Image (tube, rainbow, N blue to C red; front, side):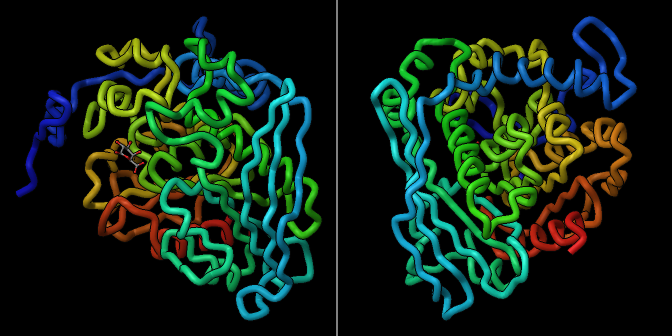
Length: 386
Ligand code: GTR
């Protein structure tokens, strides 16, 4: 019998469906001044920009100012990687502003067995760097690069901490202090998650210059805090063609208003360096948030999005994540996109793949694994008609 509550940081954590309070989600298709959106045109001209700035202002932070320059340097190339199946490129991405610079590495494997530029998956790696070992001495189910190359996709990754550290006491000591010091002072400035998402967009800038990559088919992938980052990156950078978000939970795919598992208050107290200071105002009043996370999914529309959850990860509120997708569907409907989510929360290991909005609830732990990647590939194949 699973426990219905838990204690964490002095708060009661709810794991009881019956104790989820009644809530009303903000209407994704109604503007701040009450106008109902019924067309793509008005969605794109009015409501989409409105929602995007609400998320910037209240949660993830406003995108920082322009760079002075951006440079890509190939630091290593191996045309015979993975026993000759792949081309490896290691790239240093360097950003400059006001005389300061920051470099971070990107690892990229491209399948050799192809006739056209390759579609790609880009992982924001928030776990050990060994997961994305370019030498392939270390291999990991978190980033099963060989399997992805065999399916005809390029596979890339950067490490979040190379951009800015994932620690509340030192998160500034990277992109923020070096390149955007003004942002740290602002209540609506970016913090770590905003910085990692910003970096993912710089990888897109690089992909735009690489003729081996099909720039119109780049999917962004992330797990947990990386899964939150992937959703936000694609919400604001429409060059990402697809999002695959694993166990993203609070302030990722899960609805804040359900107060099931990790809450806004808990995430802000445990990880004050992820979201902006304005977000802290909602710790004890999530119903005052002008958005909820179904609207983040709405910002991704009409691009395909796939969300995962795991049975042993109630902290990430699986049902609340599924409901977020369900409540984003009206935006996909404006684009007449086919979405095939089941009418109620699905059984374990029954993925929805042949759909613009995909989902699975799998057996096991809070993780990103081969089962998840296998479904990501199927979902991408379906949506890219491969
Ligand atoms: C947890 C955090 C979650 C999730 C997770 C992770 O401790 O509460 O929101 O981000 O870390 O990134 O693995």
